[in-house]
Amino acid sequence: MDVIKVENVTRTYKTGEIEVHALRGVDLTIRKGEFTAIAGPSGSGKTTLLNIIGGLDTPSSGDVVLGGKLISKMSGSELSNFRRDHVGFIFQSYNLIPVLTVEENIEFVMFLQGVERSLRSKKVKEILEVIGLTGSHDRLPSQLSGGQQQRVAVARAIVSEPDIILADEPTANLDSVTGSALLDMMKKLNEEKGITFIFSTHDKMIMERAKRLVKLHDGKIQSDETR
Amino acid sequence: MEVGDRLVITVAQQNTGEMSQEMMRVKGIFKLGMREMDRSIALIPIKRASAMLGLNNGIHEIAVNLKKHKNSWINDNPLWEKYSKNGNLFRNWVKLLPEMEAMVSMSGFSKYIIGIVLFLLVAGIIINTLFMSIYERMFEFGVMRAIGVKPLKLGSLIVLESGVLAIFATFFGVVTSLILNGILLKTGIDYTGTEFVSVSITELIYPVISVQQYTVFPLALIIFTMITGFYPAIHAARITPANAMKKGTK
Image (cartoon, rainbow over all chains, first blue to last red):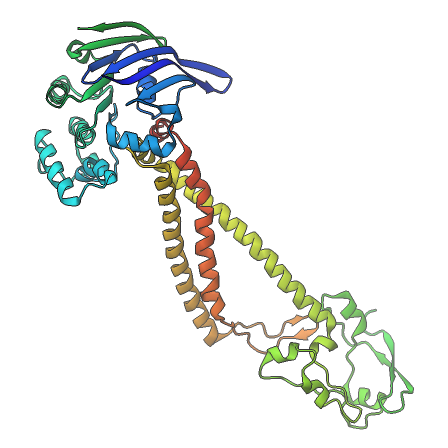
């Protein structure tokens, strides 16, 4: 079953007089349960593609079908609801809300979904155990190490059990041991819960473990290989 | 004209209307700041004035100080007619000093214009403050939008935030104003010895506190602040999450 369909998507940024073509006609279909890595050098358009897939950015042309719905036809509110209920994000620089505690950051999506407080607390407790941060629930992101922050970001992305998780260079700021442990955790989630993972990366470790490797170069797909 | 010059004063006598003239020497010159006043008012010793006007120790003008000063503004106050008998004329200051009335009206209009300018200035400051506060937290807003906060909810949050800020600011302003006015109500403002439109200020000036100042104006300020909060709120709600997170990390 196709969960994401990207059809001839282009994205052009204007910086003053200069036009930067981040994506030049990308076609990509992602099926449910895939563990896909989008790889390529810096400036190849990986993050832009991931942002467009997640509805965080809009394409200059082309269509993106997310869960059977055309993103361009969705209102801002519908898109927000879709992200809230079906998509989890993991960002390269963690992107935790600095003024919220670990617990508040993790439960934020559930709070938006209207999940009851007691259930939220229960789920946060469980996920903190999984990511090995029990007892850190009341700490602020600034009081955590990079690896711990990224684990919180993963917890925030998976706690509401979304259909798709989009991870932008999730191991870029981590040491190899922490990165590997996180990747194991995500692989487990993919195999046990069938969550679709899409990574944007140039980390060899992710590329090696991915079931599908899509290589981008200058805003175009260079190769697409399934293992 | 200079001090020491001679000046002939001509007046009409009170009873007969006949002209009476007397030459006097200038002892001093007042400068009231208004050319019309400076050219039309001359102060002479009361005894010589009385003689020139044929009053014979009588008086030609009585000034009445009303307890409720607002009553002196009413042109058709029955009081004026009640005492305008036997050749006497009783008039309020509005009729006697129309230029003063014009000055007061103009001052009221000036206050209105200054009020509008101040409100626009405050609006600019509020919008600027809210924009600065939004840009500081652009990254957070980007993350919030990315994980599912609706644009409308984010916008409402900013408008509400501006409302809360306005409530705190108004409370602080009202309390400060009450304290200051409380002090001035006791001490008064000392402008004695100065003149305004040829009227000497001889007593202390005390502030007048109206209920409107502490109800309508603060409420208007809160509503006005919330309205000005709409512009930054719309801006924050419209920005795409990817752009917001980029701006926040810059």
